[in-house]
Image (cartoon, rainbow, N blue to C red; front, side, top):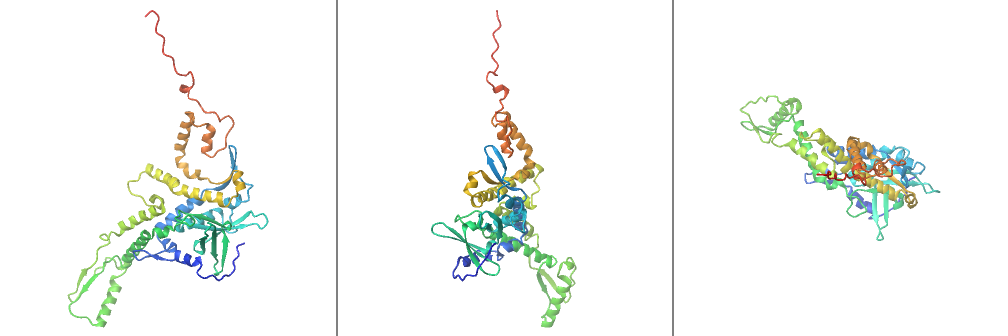
Length: 403
């Protein structure tokens, strides 16, 4: 199991890690990190829709032999990926955690617990990204410094850590999406705070309360308490203000409509969705022009353009980092079964494959392979349309005799 020992290290890469995951102030003044970003509803929704898309479809090890593809249930890694990666998580929960780490920080780490004798993988233990620091030596070798909750540290070689990277600039460490989108997220946070403050004060607008003559300190405090009691807070919204001593009220601020709070907040939803590559409709936001047909295509685009890259990223990481070269030679590979997410487009898929098969472009077993189905005997010959078979072209009619 994962063990740590105390180690004194000065100027370690963990100091860099502390800076990497430290809170950053955006231009709006909001402090943005992965934790505060999750307080923004749009960030939370984007992270959830990607994480649930990655975890809700089965993840299996497959074995390909010739034209046959079957689940590799006899492989030691199969139940770990498909059912239980560790003693406290299901496959769904593990992949959901992994995807949330990937979406927000650009990196997901898991400790690979191997058997002492066989070296086979026994479990995958997720690590919080802020507790892991990556170092690269001059020869390209990667090492991982992991800090436990009690402050102890241990260094692991690359073969002990399963590291899934998001889009990367330096090739070995994923870029932090929350940092790159900090301005959009920070503005969303500040706009929400301003709107909340507006309603906390009963959606009433600040201004100047002008009274003839000078007020003593006691009179000022008494007037302030009276305004706070009778005209601040949502419960006093719309209540008439009674003024005496020739007092006048002068509005000094714009109204909520003039400040365009709602328009700004809507735009920030789109900005955050752009940064995290999620269709706005997937987080519950859409314009009034969307139709049933266009919404269906948006859902399909979410699978193709948002989820599929994550599927490919995780599949290839499993193939390279969790499977051996011998597994590769034996045709073992990881596969996300995303067909269930494409049920809305199955009619289009069926029409597409039928057209290509009837035209002889695809053999029937090739069409079955597109659906991840095994071949059947006798379906390896292409269908030949009647009008394209040899000798099928009609001969020109003979000239009538004696014409």
